[in-house]
Amino acid sequence: MSAPGAPQGPAVGGTLGGSPQPGGFIGFGGPGSAPLTPDSRTRAGTVGFPFTAVGAEPASQRAWRIVPSLGLEQIYNDNIDFSSTNQRDDFITRITPGLLLGVDTLRLQGTLNYAPSYDYYWQNDDESRLNHQGNGQFLFAAIPDFLFLDTRGSAAVQSLSGGFTPGTEASTARGDEVQTLSFSASPYIVQRFGGTATARVGYVYTYVNQDRVDPNAALPIDQLPSSFAPSEYSSHQAYAVVRTGEDFGRLAMQGTLSGTRFEGDGLYRDAYRDIGVVETRYAFTQFVAGLIEFGWERQRFNTIPQIDIDDAVWAFGVRLTPNPDSVIIAKYGQRDGFRSFYLNGSYAVGVRTRLAATYSERLTTSALTAGDLLSTTTLDPLGNPVDAQTGIPVLPGYVNSSLGVQSGLYKETLATASISQTWLRDTISLFVTMTNRDPVAQDPGVNAPQVSSEATSVGIRWGHDLAPTTSLVSFATVGISESGGGGNTNTYGLGVSLVQELRPGLAGALSYRFNMRDGGITQTGSQNAGDAMQNIFTLGLRQSF
Image (cartoon, rainbow, N blue to C red; front, side, top):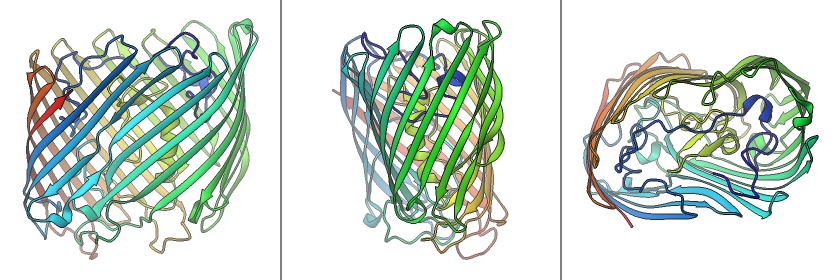
């Protein structure tokens, strides 16, 4: 989205209104989000969520686009706890009001997709729950080309104990759900100095709350143990960024100063993050640019043992743009007190095939990941998050359903690879994800120790338009994870959905999902307590107004 008087993409450093990100605009500028699905009237959502995005009208050139909706689903689940020892079935009525808002005017740009859901359990009413799901980002130009306000928010639910392959809808006990809410607001000013330089100075307020949907409910005894404790923090960040302009030709430079102070309990008490870094990019050719960065960082977290980082930051790498719809950034350097490799790439092979891959290592927590994600993603026209650098779809890093949620500071290694093929009526995607979490320090308010965990999963998605108003979506995933030396846990998921537009604005959906988990260690300490299997049948209607 763009409008006269508004900054065209990231003005300087990182994403619009967010904190300056490692690499800034120099290493990360991408081609934007390319459409990877057929342009049908009945759009499917992500794997495991085939119905929530249905009924939204195609994007238009209107300044304001407001699409309220109401969904009603009847669900039968033969194992509502996803348990191997306490198998309960139930009928569930789900009511999902939704609002899709898009705006693209001279002063205001943005997208909101908010769809909370209420699940009523007919036989086990103590399992009834309200979950919040959605994303929103808005940029307001208070004074065009000078003063801006960027606001962002996200809401998501995940399984506390894990045991689901990433991207599939976790259907589990109420006591096993964690709700994450995150919000940021950033006023900033931009000053351009002709073709010599551009400067941006701003402030970012971020709030993150991560808690169990029902804090009083017990975690099912045959699921994986957890060291989770509720997390809530606010952060205040001030930053200044100066970027060279086109007068420098092939050479681009950016200097960043950023200071963040945290307010909260536990490991966030008196915590801070400070960094000063200079980045350079030199374009050897139209397609190849070299990257160098150097600087210093200071980080402190109130952990056991206390984490104090006071060290150099450096990196060198390359940025490749083989065609206008592709970008590949590869770097090796030191940040967060350790050396690591970084990769973020999206490569368009012709007009129908796209390859994507990422690799990163960072020092973080589940709540910090939620806050950082606000500034590293943008939204597509339907409100789904995509990477701000490459435009590829993003599954929120804190919604990794294969691993349980832990409190405390850990080093997370995340790698993904995918290939998507798009035809006029079909889209097929293959993907692989790998996540590894190594404990670094304990939250002083949590008694349960952290444990190392890792997970790898592979999957395939296929979407097919049977007709202009009929879509078929299917997926299959396989994963293996290990936590705390408790042995391997194998997870399997598959599903199929048929979506039919009954009339303009009204769509119906019929779906089936299967989840299975075996192996690992349980809350009681036993190994291989038995297979947990789950069959879910759903019939639903969604009316868009």
